[in-house]
Image (cartoon, rainbow, N blue to C red):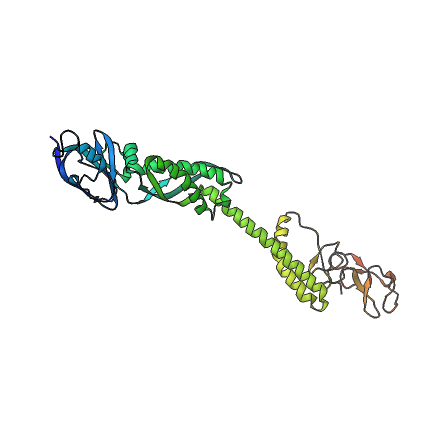
Length: 367
């Protein structure tokens, strides 16, 4: 014996049921004059002898009014309008079901143009809504008495993930270009997924990407590359500042000391970095006779104070600086010869010209 249905309606107390059959078991005898109530967020489909007939939207239907065309035709069969109609009704929940999850269970391979072959994890969510009730019931629900979000979420999530892998491989060359492109990727991916969902009468009403993450070691490599780029830019800035300071010093001799000092201040980090490169083979240096800072043996001027390094002695008469190997003072004409006796350096023993203040070899002060 079947169930005699006089009032046909359905309430979803769980909020997770997409399709529900009345009656839940077998077919029911729908009486002539039965009341069918379909709410705003629902659709109802009549099944007769295993086939889907009318799908009706929101409203209240009385079988005596004959306002359902296919049902009217069935009721016009030889048994007349007073015999019950043996059929089932599927109610479809047409609301939007949000926050369905998709993501990688295991990392997926991605060929990065910069980092090589790496494995990625990706996670996100999507929203669905049934827009073709009959197609949805025939392709997914079948004869189940109830069909919930849990029944379909995993399957649809795999479809999203499959399309994600294809789309990312075709539209992203390297993870270094990923920041700021989530919305673009999400929009492109939605177009592909919607085509797949439409085969089941489902509309994709929103797709979001929460994260795309490489393994920890790849993240560390990206961080290191960012740091190297920052230091490279800093090195260029220091070189530019140093060049500007030296140019200013050349144009304003009276302020050369301040300008040069500023340039050296900017140049110190770069000088330190360069010195670290050759720390295992330090270059031989001597001291400036004027300020005592180390200078290269081939230098003609001190880079710290600008002193002329070829001046190594003074005239015994007027005490003006003398060039190296000078025989006469260019200021007073006094003869300067070795007959006046060389001066030995107390540190290295090098014999310097008479009147020398600093050793011409090691820079040690003599007098």
